[in-house]
Length: 230
Image 1 (spheres, rainbow, N blue to C red):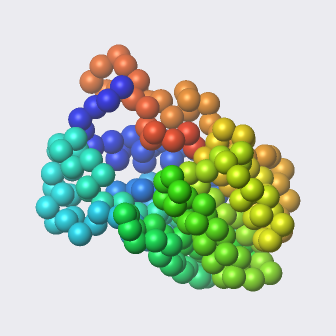
Image 2: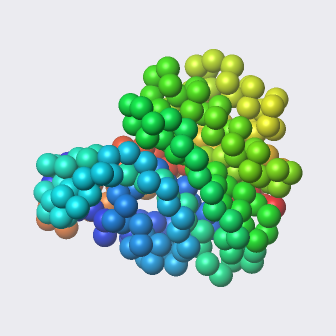
């Protein structure tokens, strides 16, 4: 169901109720960052992506008439790390631009006190996707050094679109695609993966609309979850 109202409360509730220690989110409206971190009891590290130069005009409008702004509200990639877990303190955060045109694409990474590094990005579409993925993987590998690494996000590539995923495995040791038809992945190296990367069933991202008997589907992408130990 499509609704013309702000859904930040529903997103906060969904994330707060889910079981996770580390969340990698793409294209989050920047005005949501603080509220999402507070609602989930997490430390947040964000990197701005595209369409953010008109925020003073688009933010007030997006609160009340989001259909008029759409993605022009601005975007960010957000890493959330829940507080209180052993070794979960963020000790480093860095980011780099993958491409600027036609949209700004960014990769960012946090290093946790336990040694785990987690990189988050949203690749471009079409022919640009492979280049963005390769650059994101190379930067994350260089930043992480010999530490364990998670590389996650919207790759905009399926494993059968070419040899790139095999190259990432051979060059950086990154593996663990979600599935042959998936474009959202959580690749890892140097960790024990106890539950493979799996897409949520559609019903997990459907929430009741308070103004009708219908369901609202939060996000046009299905969340992907995995369980690892370091």
